Length: 181
Image 1: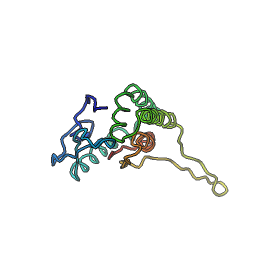
Image 2: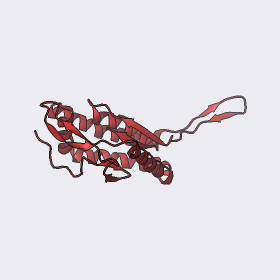
Image 3: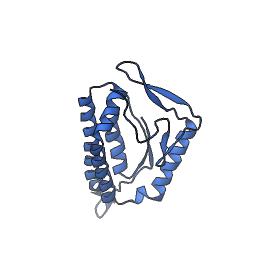
Image 4: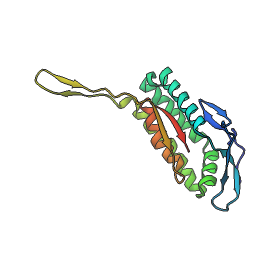
């Protein structure tokens, strides 16, 4: 199996919705674990790139995402799940090559990613604060609020599933994300 044509440049970082070359232009060889061959070169990224990603995520949080209604966040995540399934062939091929797992297992992982997005999309508007009895005549009201920018480091063995579990939950609750695959 060889690397398919990609709709992006893997030697770039995705920051603020734009593919950008890393500031130091350093690249890492991405090896196929099944045979040791080089699949492609990917962006290394450095602390400047991370800082830029955090700043972009903070701007997205401050300008719109934290105030996007939960039902709308849910619709966006559900749509993302459908988009993942629409691209299952490309995503599962990339997963199989990158991780060295059988294509059928990679397809299951892509389906899991889509399902996590659907699950968290459905849960986005179901998380509320609580009113708790306190003392006679008093109640305590809790409110769930997003934290802001969240960081996600994804392990090598189940990247699709872990992205779904961690990023899906964070986005559903109104946080923005910086992801290091």
